[in-house]
Image (tube, rainbow, N blue to C red; front, side, top):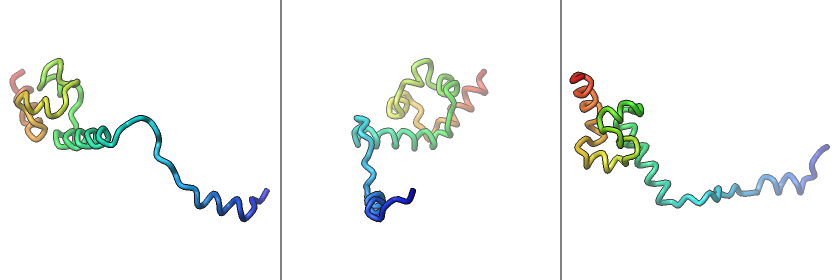
Length: 86
């Protein structure tokens, strides 16, 4: 069946509403910043993070990891040093 002209026009002008999942704009920005730091760190695996930061490494934020002594930019160097020390 062919849709009427009025129905097709209404379908084209309908706006897509953002999902109401309860996530604030601040949370979205914080997650984006964390993902950028994850890329800077060379996309480490969970085992790599545990090796460098210890058992609590995966649950830490990148700011906490930097305070622990290894910022995201220095992660690969710290990982290589830990692997060489094994």
